[in-house]
Length: 320
Image 1: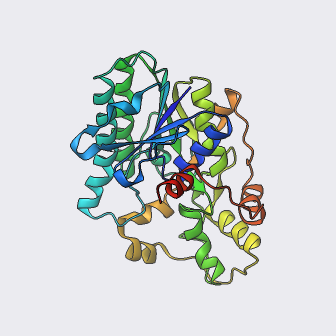
Image 2: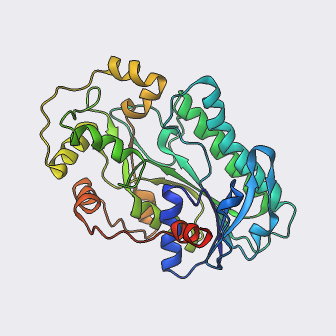
């Protein structure tokens, strides 16, 4: 088996690539930078430009599965122009992949797994969302995910199984939300955000990477929530981080109006409440290694200090 990954150089992509390589599965990856193209047999790069619909068709050679993670970060201020980029980067990437597959013999392709997000679910302090919930959020993130998933579903026309992973808050010390959450706590100015009662459905980066590979290896289809079995409130998350970092929490909650003043509409990312179930993937036989927020944070901050060299870093060293 060989797996093609878009977004392989990002936080989640690098973690998935490590899991695949530990299983002896080689990876092809697509990059918009010709300087980052590796010719390693285990981690081989190919050029593409989704904005222009350009893709090197050789990227599909011997590929049995595709994992799509491409898309501009949502953790930047949502100006009108950037909101368009958030949507177009996701839709254009999928259109370009599908166009490329339409130009080759894709009969060897068995499954297509695309990233998605729990932002599709409405904001609620009380509802416990499962994959078959039909109601979707009416805000910007709900709009993004609906378009993202609809485009991913068009790959069914190619006769391949399609799976979508609705990712929650990814916990990693290497990037994403956690370092931003930890910074004020480390500097003795940490506090719950807004009411602090909003639910945060999170997942350890290692569990998320293993989940993607599990879906590929078992050729699963449909929607799966990429979250741990035990979501927590923002207050609980903040208190556990403070405990692990050995810092006091003495400030009151950060009011909503301050967050909205500083972050604008992007404040939705920290104020929205989505309590999401991770039971469906468990019913397929997947086991979470870090199902509890305490053990997840302890592993990330108190675990082994040795950092494995990622396939991307190895490739960059090779090209240097």
